[in-house]
Amino acid sequence: MILREKPTKIIITIGTFFAFLIFGFADNLKGPLIPVLLEEFTLSYAQGSNILLMLYLGFMLSILGSGFLAGKYGNRHVLLLSGIVISLAVAGMSLVQDKILLYPLFFSIGIALGGIEVGANGAITDIYHEKSGKYLNLLAVFHGAGSMIAPWMAGILLEKNLPWQTAYKGSFLPILLFPLIFLFLRFTSPKSQKNNINNLKSANKLINTNLILLALLIMLYVAGEIGISSWIVDYLYKVKNFSLKSASIMLTLFWAFMMLGRLIASLIVDRIGYIKSLIITVCLALISFGVGVLPGKYSSYLLPLTGLFFAMIFPTAIAVAAKIFPKNKARALSFLFFFAGLGGLIGPWIVGYAANWFGIAIGFPMLMIFIIGSLVILLILKARLRS
Picture (cartoon, rainbow, N blue to C red):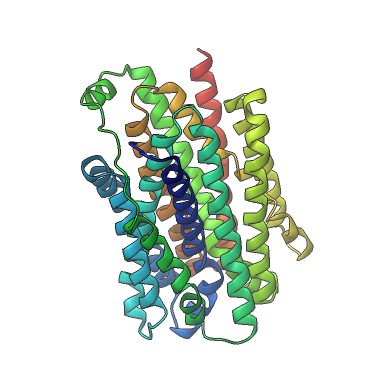
């Protein structure tokens, strides 16, 4: 990234951190609002799942398109376009009165989130070549901060019996600040190496298999994470007899533990080792989630703790990929981001349809399948890397 002044570098860093704050907020505002949307628009769980499906379908398509745009026009244009799209989508959500409009609006939010994912990560890695791991973890912390604020704010508004659209109306002006930052900021991204595609294609079978395993790991993990953040409020509200405000606070705690876990992970993961750290945390996540969905209200208080153990999975898996593919990092990460979007699409969709057939009391605990699958993938990956 070509920067003429050091302040520009600082502004870009602040801008990308703010973009990820908006990312976390917009992505997780849906959690506490899902029960309200289902009731107000008389939606079935299947219809609710389809709306969430549109969001992550938009995210996946955006990952593909944003990678192309970033390579051709630079990360600034991707972030600027994403900011415009999410501002318009949030404005639309603040006014919507017809359930049909939820589908294109959620799709638009997904488009914006995918662009933020690509543009912000790309901008950070362009600026901080040697310290990209540190700043990518900080980027994830800001995502966690936005993810905490959304359910906390929505829970307060819903407790006061305000319309759910108020959450979007109140956040419009802060979100509008995001594209304005990149509208007046000027910077260019370095040209990608022409031989990157050929290098990736020439990677041997063992490396490619390991990348596929990492992609499956990320897909399963994201399916579990987004499945929890999308349906935990509805599950606690309807099955464990929490109030909407209390259930929203539990989602806030989930993301608070996620932030704490990422801060802790940045200090210990290099000492313990990537794969070993992942296996330990996935096992702990399996225990906390498994106990959390047992009958009774008090066991539910362990559910937010799953966020603490989930915290290091995504950034650490990305670090493993960067270590395996030092010369093709950008394309390898784009491949993993695509599978992350696929996981975000699958997780909430499966829970919603299972809830539609059997009830949310059975649909939500089915997320354990993704955690178990993550553990199996890690054990296979550990054996392959050891050999």
